[in-house]
Image 1: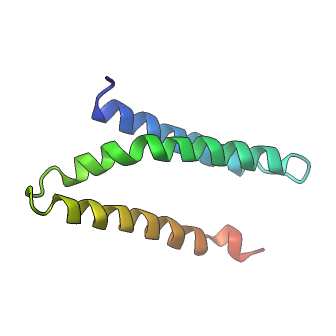
Image 2: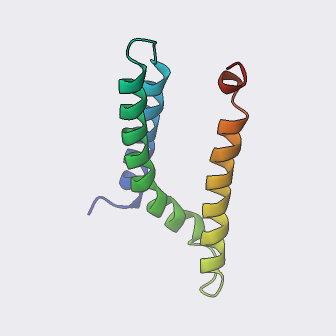
Length: 93
């Protein structure tokens, strides 16, 4: 319908919007912006995950495509967790 490129771009844009919403956190309105940012960012992640996996694994052979998709998915999830754990903002808290 939209194509791989447009779907992936829309999803990544939604992730960026979600992250920007979470950077506007204040004491008075922290929960609203965090929840909105998480929902929008997760919708973007779900929208972009499949087309990015398709694009990342299309050069692999037919027999290795499942392994490539698993490695790509694992690296995305571990990289996100590592980046969140080592964030300078969280280390100050």
